[in-house]
Image (cartoon, rainbow, N blue to C red):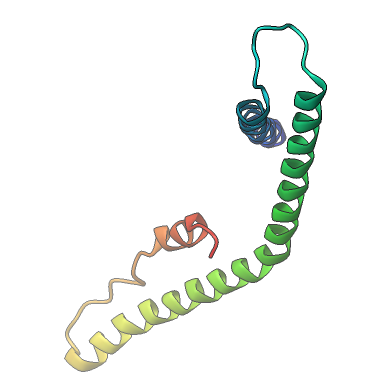
Length: 121
């Protein structure tokens, strides 16, 4: 089931990129809509536009793939530090007051989700 969802997400992402490229290149290159076929100039423009778009998309994705492991490690380290700080705060409160009941570790369930959901820097 998870594999099918991932395939659907990949297909959706591909279609979004393809539609964006088609729209952008058409608006830049299609000058005359009075004829069924493209002129040689329009064809060359569309070919050049699509090639540039695909190459830039590949470079962008390569950069993203190269940077992603470091970003994930940084976010995990931040999450672990937040957990350590949150775990040490209740211990400090119980040491100072002596009468505070033990309530267990604080809830930080959304911290990882928030860290992962942040856009790349």
